[in-house]
Image 1: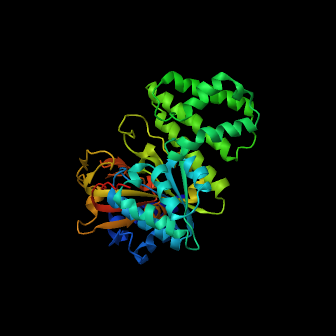
Image 2: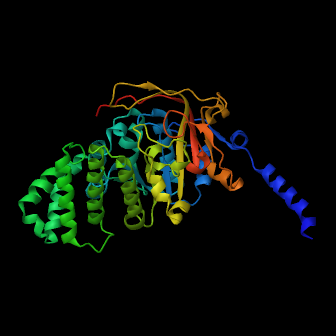
Image 3: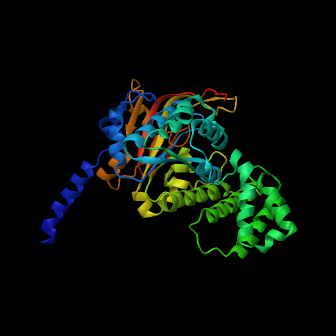
Length: 421
């Protein structure tokens, strides 16, 4: 009987193998071409395919190849509007100051005259001083607070850089720790090693002072004996601990300083989703290099500075439940120029490699969306590597369909123009 079944099993295997669609053919047949990325466009019909791909996800992560990619920012702004108005996403969380964009934003009077300067001073200037983000930051966000559905701003980065943090973080923590009757707050070391160092923690290159700050945090945590890990103050202290560990690793020429930061950003994002916004959907605005999952599937998966890639998206989606609730949309481009708006030097993007993802899309197409999640579902087990500029503006070989849930393609990249406020 077994011998009789073998030919049929063999035929079934061959048929199944033939039914597996090649990724190049999938892109040709299933991509959704998009005509405009203008944030002024109120016709969201051509974005519905992206909405369908996102489905009931609670988290949508929007990437970028570089922090100066003007068309990407326009496309992301349009997507933010669509997700907010059509898909019920009411929180927009940035790769920016966790303290300032949570404590500061919560206390902010929600009027345009207050919102605009707050965003300018507390979200990284690579975005707030870019002309392509002007509509989002200085028109749309404040406008939603005159509507019935305000767009809440938040942040998940443990780097301390915002104006609100510079003005309020020290007092906030001092008051909190004294309210908990921490004996260490009465010591001279507390004032020298902890309080006086907070304002410069991100940029201070004094290794000994960083180590002293870390020891101060350890002493505080020993006395605090926190059992409630759901509070904002607990997450804030964890963020500061990760920040100083990352700085110490960098100054000591370690290899894990980016990984420390990404892991904490993932923890902060989990906290936002579970405790601060348990009933909300969240849009995440960050770099491709932070949101991608499975960086180990990229050949020679190293960052430009040489250290191993372990990403926020990797840490975040390691939780299977969160993975099922998250849609990760990477951004990709064919040709052009890039560069950060606050730095004068710009650079040409690498041309597309032969037989790369970029060449599979006709040159006449300005923008396109490819749903890698659909490809995975229709072609289980297909993890073939192909060439794509999937993280930065240079080509890598990877199983990209397992790294992103979708890709937003842009034909021509160009850098932001500086907006002076």
